[in-house]
View 1 (cartoon, one colour):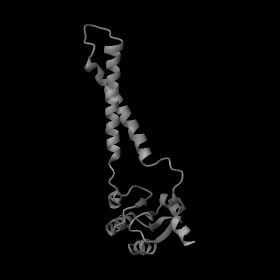
View 2: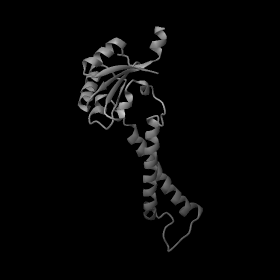
View 3: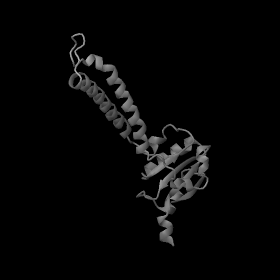
View 4: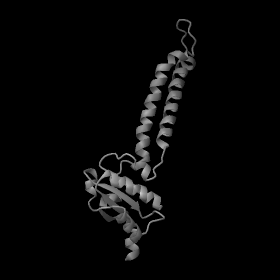
Length: 181
């Protein structure tokens, strides 16, 4: 029975009353060696992202590459139409009139950068996510109203059920609940 209970444990969720407490608790948890944790708050809390050790910079690079592909694609399309497939000499201008291609190239850059920002963010966050184990935590529905939660995952190498629960209580958690899968 214990092995089954252990295998269904997702982690421990600590509930806090205010944003200052969760930031302090997240710093302490990170300093204690916990790396697989996440925070849930009703509004953005300054400093919390850094406190839990989240240092992901994939989205800006995805946006950059999306914009670059958009610029190259927009320019290549115009060049192909004007100089390769349908070359019309209008007014003695060169077929590769790059100055005339700037507005469409710019618009394609913005369009693809925006689309990659939206879809890249959704993909990296695993959205839409209709179910997550944290939804099973007792009292978690208040995370969208007035409570702040810090969840330490059982997959964390430093995780110990009793030790982690005691640590979370010691850093000011109002309550600590088990999160089952």
